[in-house]
Length: 464
Image 1 (cartoon, rainbow, N blue to C red):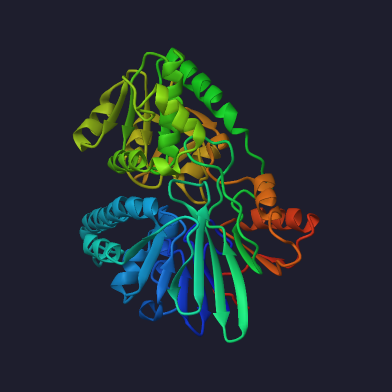
Image 2: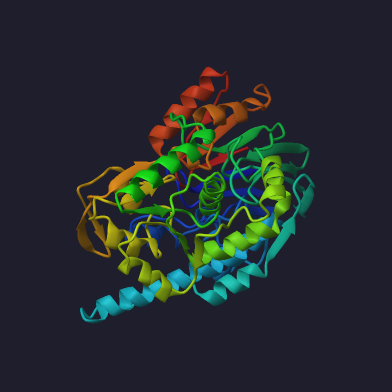
């Protein structure tokens, strides 16, 4: 029985881990590596085993850095089943097709740019038909109901409270007379956030694979998010500026919209328009409306007073690209929420290009931005940033709010792991985190009495 770490090993993207035992090979997540173009091309073309030899994928949630390589996996030979919660299946139908569209358009843009130089044409990482094909392999599962995808393997999903449909995964692996219980956190959410239920405790396990994104950090309390949002929007509108919010289409966009909906109901939102400029976010918001079984008690009560928690009078959802372009020509105050969250692709790049040089405007960062991304360079307040290869002075105000993070911080992760039997837990593997964050979290876990806390390198394998 062997565990191999491949993606999100000492980095925060491309989640992928391989469990091998006599009954088969199982991938935990199959995420897209997001980073510098050359490195992304190399990493996204490599797997810990040949795709045709992989029997099943257990998907923790729909974020592209956890699901986004599935179309390529299928194209390259995978013919097993992909297991995910009902909401995750619905989200992946939208997100994997959107990702394929982006891959195709990105390749077209590069080929147009390089044709004049006589460079070789590039192929997209995968195409729409690859996304459609792997979506046929999805198998929806319920929270809290064990199932057996392969002989000798029992799996249970529990609510991780990270995004709609997110799950922690418990694997009971039987090999001969041996039984090993493996726990995989996926991404752990936070308690007391709006919309979703709090993370559900995991069952005890022998080996734990846990995210470590915010090791060494403590977030602002979630209840301060609405107040700070009101202040930022208010002062930006007062000076005639725009608030530009790069936000992931899943989870973050819906939470911000819900906060703005609350402010509107309280009479605290300035009389300016709010635009959600992302076709994917529009589709995802519709999916949110279809899955009230994932809502927490507070949102259920809120809906009794306001049946549309993701919409209000001055909120406009934009699909059409021409409507998006018109926003860039306006100099009136407004709020624009657009994907992607790390400002690496999508319509947000156009909004940033047209607005970062104006000191009346505010760029509001509401989530984690990995190294080498445009979002990280904005957080660092670099005086000049490059967008579409061209330099732009960064004169807009920059605000960073980690109270919107959908990831548990260090104290929250330590408490989450603290529910597990420390005597039974033999090893803890830290993934989905930068090395300095992993060092911090390892120290915190060791101070709580946990032993054998490791941060494996890419390609490292461990016998269980």
